[in-house]
Length: 209
Image (cartoon, rainbow, N blue to C red; front, side, top):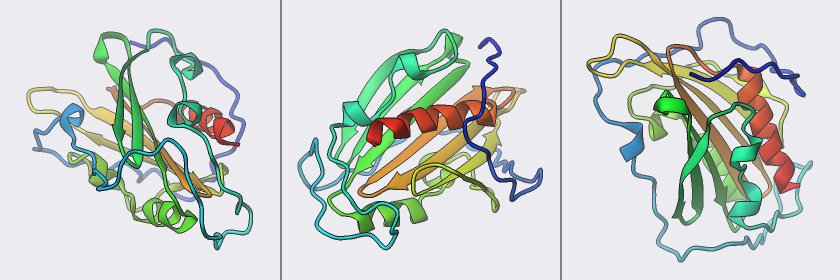
């Protein structure tokens, strides 16, 4: 199990929801390790070419970096015992997976590199937890995060068949210009502290700008 980590939250999660963030969907047996990501018909691209302006005035300039430059590394995870187990590429999606000690925890970090700002904004608006992790239905409420142009935090949980404990999934998504980013942190028995996943998301965003 991970050691406890005390960190200073550099941003404040705005409390817009009460305790009703947890959504449980029991009885499903599919595994998060075997989820299939959408695949684009176009060839993989390492950089982005933005051809339009955004409706969000804060960020109109494009981000032109490679996936490795945009994603966090194991050194950015503020808990000991994690190691990278894969780097998956499905244009326009690029994802790293980090396993915690004894696979009691797993962190997924992902960026989508688009050609246009509207594509990033559309993906952000349409993405919910249940699209990615079939055992969880997205909660009706979320917490807004002060990160990037806009960001949100969700918490869900499920129970695998044969296990008598819950597996919690903390989910953060955010966007800026032509880039969409997300983190999912799955851990047994208790969720990762919101401040920790937010700080990792913020570290990831600092790589963008």
